[in-house]
Image (cartoon, rainbow, N blue to C red; front, side, top):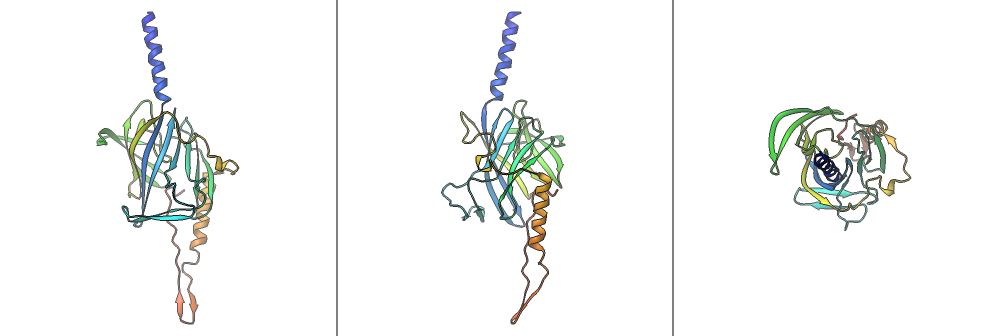
Length: 253
């Protein structure tokens, strides 16, 4: 009887140690907006159900600079303070998060969101991704249909961006129009993270707004930029009509 107790305690402790391992999930995020491609590397620092996701930037770049990515035939732009980069901080209970995102080329906004788990439809369809057997799942989220492929894992439940609620690790996820896609490229076990799992210090004095207020601000900015799209300006040599087109964002509401 004593042996059984010892074995049971050891097994429970082993599970606790594994669950608290520090892991970096390296994701690649590609956005294809009417042929304009953005390709961003993301690092998600994960420990015991809590995570902080941030983009990987070229540290040699200065603020408000740009550089060409010939591989993707695109141009990447870093705007503003490199200390105030976008991020997503997820709580360890999977229900709440805080994120920073900018509107057009304006300042970053600090936003809190109260997400419940996604309502996933898990199928029996499988495929191999990076030598791992993954299962297909689909969901509707704020105006878009998403398809995900995840590896079942009882101890580590994680996904890029705001995705979560699946019983394992999301290896790929994209909307059904393939505008927004995420791919897990590498999993790294580390002793320490390069950043604490908290809101970055650069945002310490920012006031948090709700997700619905952020979307309202984004829509107002879109209306303001596009309000003169059908207005002709006449000159001595003719007329001009400048059009501003603001690209959509992942969440339509």
